[in-house]
Structure formats: C-alpha cells, structure tokens
Length: 369
Image (cartoon, rainbow, N blue to C red; front, side, top):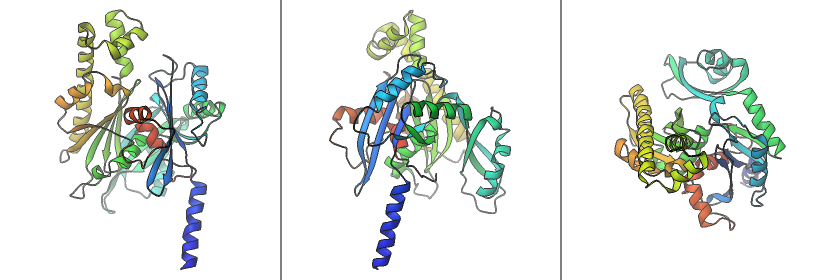
C-alpha cells in the first residue's frame, strides 16, 4: 500500500517536472495577450494576465511582422508584469503562414502515417513540403476495418516558425509550444463547455467557434472535443475600419474611433450594418458548407469571442440569421479562482479577449498532443 502510494506520488512529481506550466501568449494584429494558469486541488486557477496594444501596421493581416522593434518592445513590456512566474510560453502561430486541411486517405496506423505524411500532404498544401513543418490528427471514429479515414493536417512554414522563435528569444522568452490558434481555441472550449462535448446519443455534437479578431475572423468546427475544420475570413475588425476610412475619407485612427464610439451616427451606422450583413452571410455559408458534407448532422451551438464581437449590431445579426443558438464563449467560467493581483476589469477583458490565450495556457511543456 505504502509502496503504491509512493510510486503514484513519484509519478506525479515526475509529471510536474517534465510538464512545466507555460504562459499562453496570443500575438494578434491589434495587440498581445498573455495568461498564466496553475493547477490546484480545486482545478485550474488564474494567476496572471496582461495585455499590451500594438501600433497600427506593426503586424499585417497576413501575419507579417512589419515593425519588429515595436513588437519586440511590446513583448518586453508584456512580461515586465511581475505576476508571471515563467518566461516559457505556448504561442499561437498566426497569419497566412499556417494552414489546416481535412483530408480522406487510405487507413493506416499512426506510425505509418507519420512516415508518409509529407507525401500525403504534398497535393493539399500550397507550399513546397520541404518548406513546412507538418503535423496531423486522426479524426474519424470508424471501425478498424474501414478502408479510409479522415485526417486533419496542419502545415506551418518553417521560415515563419524560425522568425517567430527568434523574435521571442530576443524578447527573453522561450517558445516551448507553437500551437495552431484554432486548436488553442478548441482547448478553451473543451475546458469550459464539457456539456457540449458529448452528445446524448453518443455521436459527438457539432459546435461552431467564432473568433472575431482584428486581422481575421476565424471559424472553427468542433466535433465533440476535436477541431475538424477551420477557415479564416477576410471580413475582420481591420476590414471594417478600412471600409469606414475609404467611404468617409478618414484616416485609420479616426475610422477606428468612429467604429467604436460613433456607431449611432447615420453614415457610420450604414457602413457597419453593411459590414455585419456581409460577415454574417460568410459565416452562414461556411457553416452550410460543413453541414453539406455531413447532412445528417446539425449544429448544437455557436460560440463567439474576440474583440471584434463587440462591434455594434454584429451579435444581433448573428442571432437573426443563424439557426443554432448563439452565445458568448467564456474562457474563464471553469477556473477555480484568480490571484489577488487580478481585478474585475481583467476578468471582464478575458471573457471576450482571452479565449486563445487561455487555451494556450492550458498547454504544458512536455505535452504529447
């Protein structure tokens, strides 16, 4: 009995040693967000959160870092906050240098697929396979004797990964995990919405996650606890600002202020309404496409997050046009509590800005998946 307890205790100590807690770092076009969680007997607890804005154009909508010094300075400022216990991070890749694709291939063992992955992926990705890092997740739940299986492949350009790692190194940070932002969002969803992971019939329910960012609107389809489809839409926060700038003859700063504060003024209202219509239509088309591939399935819920979700009238437009229930994705509702340095404003920010960062912070150094 004592020997078993000691073995379990040692196993737990060893696991904690190799699985170092990481700060979840979300690098976006409009700013940086960082979240640190810790494990307690009551569950995950929030210990630190910080956010630092970026100047316009420092990172493009494609994910290119145009003003390296500005981003580097913001990273250093972000981690100057004393609440963080480590500078080891889990960071999400961003922009057009990473793609995901669901493919159907001949059934094979995971080890065999790993060996053939580059050959299998070559016909599906727009980059030369020698220039990318590849990973995969087997999605299907078919029987073992089925002839084919569904696989989600993820490709990230090596030069982007190297550039991102170099930027973080220069800021005094260590990227232990570089994750897909859609997968990070799925982590946050799974952690907080366990009731939406398992359906009553045993068939994994379909959920839609909408992340309205400054540089892209990300649509993710989650089947049970697996992200099976992602798509980035060009209709995003920056696109709305550009519409206002071009139509009203405003510079970008004034157009952003008009979007945030003058949305009741008639000329601004008309443009925002037009943008909301176009964005919601594109979201609906994306969902219809996915359902078209699985006509026997239906969406149980649509969950939204991101700073762009606060655009006046957008949520109302989603509720009016989409058939499934629409609700905010709250990434902190299952946390056991927060540190004394957290305040109410930080918690409010995290509820709509922190989903990706929280999902990243749920990762740990030494994770096998």
